[in-house]
Image 1 (spheres, rainbow, N blue to C red):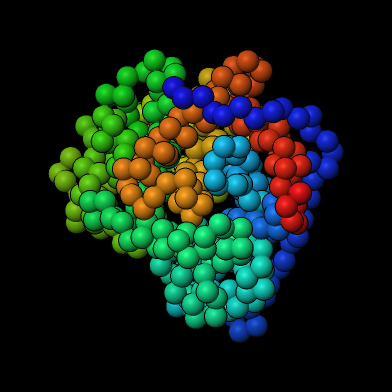
Image 2 (image 1 turned 60 degrees about the vertical axis):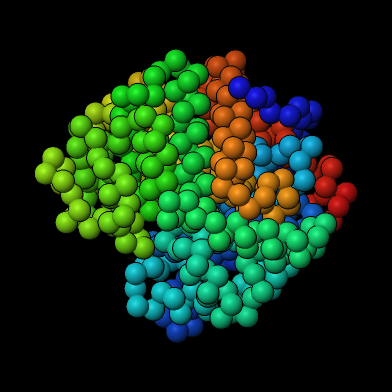
Length: 411
């Protein structure tokens, strides 16, 4: 497997990874009372990156944790020889049901309120509960040029870069936009890298996926095409299971904009089970690809899988992860596993890849496999978990990035 470019190890000074974020903003919608949040964990050259989610119950603490995760994702993809220069980490969140009648108007007002940050320092895009098309439409209504316009001054050729990204978003593969596939492709490659390192065959390996939206749907598609068998998927209505394997393409074709599957598409052998049934499915790999905090201290006892690949952000609570590790179950952490979408945006915008599906998938494959390999080797060498290893790698890179590029301007 290809090795990651060498990055000099630098001792982590106390200021390198501050215990609190750089900036936290809480917004209250004056019409509905819904609250929204923005957390900037760190800046690099004055800019930070992280998606915007909308879900009922979203909290400032949740967004703060997600922003710190984005800082790590950016650092983990640092390649000194690449055009893509990592940004700082950030995240936005709105406490509102995206299916509610008022949701779109709340989104527009949130973006209007956050407009000064988006124009100057925060680049954002779709996350849980939102699609990129919806975010783009609301951003235009809020008076924004783009949700990533803060990065434009850092580009060598802004017009060419914007054209390249627009062309990439127009690419479709088997009827699905490339932007909706690259994240799940990255998750799938992370899973395959772990299987390969363990000497486990792809054929016959069983997968259960929670969430059949953008990330979960693409993950199921690519793992199935790699020879694995998807035996369960869960959405808001419950779990769909078939020990012989589900028809993933048929389920993808039957889902709505929120990833909910029309049950009329099920085959005779498909069973409808309760929502949490996916956890105890007989499978080698579980892929939580929906909400945060899904696997807790109580329900982790139902899991018999060998690997959990965090396609969602923060789906496994720390105490649950400790208990899973004691039982020999490996959690492949979100800061690595689901980092492909964010990286693809910047690889494309900065010009490391063009607006081409084959090039995007090949670059994602090389990068994710190399990153997973170095993380698992580090975990084995340190006698720790993959998450601890990933955090250690990020902590080594952050001071290098800060020293080379500066927080607010180029160093």
